[in-house]
Structure formats: structure tokens, C-alpha cells
Length: 347
Image (cartoon, rainbow, N blue to C red; front, side, top):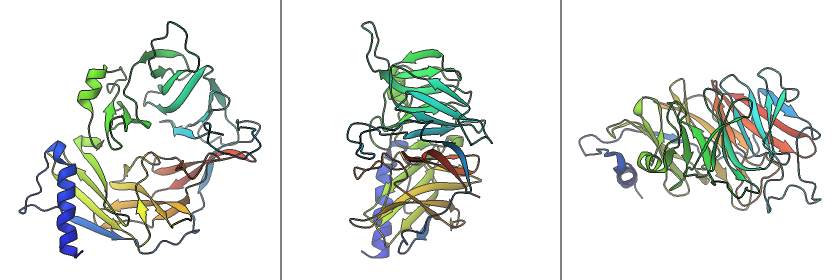
């Protein structure tokens, strides 16, 4: 395929993706792509963390004692969910012991407090700006009069504020206005609002009406991510009218792809922070973190292990990542050493 043909097909593909927000990609106003070429990926060159901001020894966090290592055939064998609060505290869900572990900012040695979630089957959690704990959860053994509501809002000390029925996908995330979203409820790329910006639950009808095909960003902007073959990925930021403000075309000699649910792309100092998975057939997969600016990649991209979780398996359970305060955070678990959260500067 020639460069001109590839560019033309790319515009067509992006136009189809953006049809839901009426983007105009006419010949008179073509998308201005910024090309980023990664070349051949060097596996095994992993960045060391700048700091460990939370850690718990094997006696402080639960792991399955099945004698078969950390297989995930019957559910997580250890922690796989975490988040970073607005005040810098680190939260990890200790799935085996049905509780949240909380580390105060600047005190990484041991969790400072715990919040029991006994009797709940928790699939995901995230933290609101006001400290609300949002859970995607159901009762492990529901009472006979249970409504089956799957969205829980808890106060910072764990008391139930309300429950509601929600259209759940693979993850919970907080949007730019402070509203809670479910990612992937309809399709892998969809974002469904579950609450107002003030944290009140939306009805199922309101959730359906508010579902968008793209990640919402501040100022009414949207992020579009698109995979074109096994060696090319596109990102674009569009405004309310559907006009593409910035767009990046990333190509690699090594097979690369999007990994939904690992890292939610975020803007840091005007640059877009994204993560891609690079892999070799029958071999390793690594997360590559990139900082995309107006002229391409800004700063040096770096790689992290995709199998830093005890519960990692060949089915695709990847190491979760979060962006907060200009840093990237990575959860790491091992039944011999416990759980840790590593921090990397993005500036």
C-alpha cells in the first residue's frame, strides 16, 4: 500500500469512527496527522520505577494458596484492582480478604487503614473527586429481598450512600466533569455516564442516552483510538462539532496494539499519555508508554512489564496502570513479596 493510499484509507476509517459526532473530513480540510515511527522494539529494556508509593508484605495482603502458583482459571489469585485518590492516597482491593487497603500519601511502608467489603463480589472500583468509593459489585449471596443493583456509592469510611442499577462494562472511570462512567458497556470503546457530575445516580434511560463512542476529555473534547492492522494505531482528539484538533499515526515494525482497560489515556501538561502493547509471536508482551504532543512523541517513551500481576495469564490479564499528578502508577503483585504500587514521572 502506498503512503497516499494509506492516508486516504485512514481518513475514511476515522470518518466512519467519528460519524456519531458529525465530523467533517472534506478534501478542503484534511486531518493533519502527526506521524510517530517506533521502529523495532527492544524487549527486556524496562524502566525502573522512580519510587514505590505503596507496599504490603505477603502477610498483609491475600493470595490464593492453591499450590499451583497464580493461575486465574477460577478468579483472581491476588489483587488486580487499584486507584489513586485526589489526595494522593493509594487504594488496592484485597480481593481474597474482601477489603480495600489504603496507604496515605508519603507513607508507603504499610497500609494505614482498611475498609471491609465482606459479602460483596466486587468486579471493579474507582474513587470520586469528593472521596466517594464507587463499586461495581453484587452480593456474593444476595438476600431474598435484594434489588440486584450493581452500582454502589460508599462514603470514604465505607458506609453505603446509595445503590443503583447501571449498564456496566469492563471498567469504572471518572470523567473530566467528575461524573462516573462505565467503559465498554455497549462496545469496547463506549463510555456510559452512570452519575451526574455531583455524584447522583442516573436512570438506565439517561445512561443509554448519554452513551458515547469515544472517551470524553475536558472542554467538550473527545478522544478516538483506532487500530489499523497489526503495525499501526491512530489517536485523535476532536471537539464538540466533530472537528479533529490533533491526530497521531503511530507505526511500528514490531506488532503493536491497543489494550483496553490497562491505561485510560490522559492529558498531562497538554500532552496525551497513551499506552500500547508490543509483542513478538509466541513471546513477551510489554506495555510501551508514550507522550504525544503537537509535533509527535515528546520525551522518551518507556516500557513496562505486562505481567507484573500474580494473576497474569496468557488469556490477556494485563498489569493495570493509572495516571495521576503527572505520574504513572503500576500495580505489582507476587505471593512471595506481596503487593506494591510503583510510580514513574511523566514529565
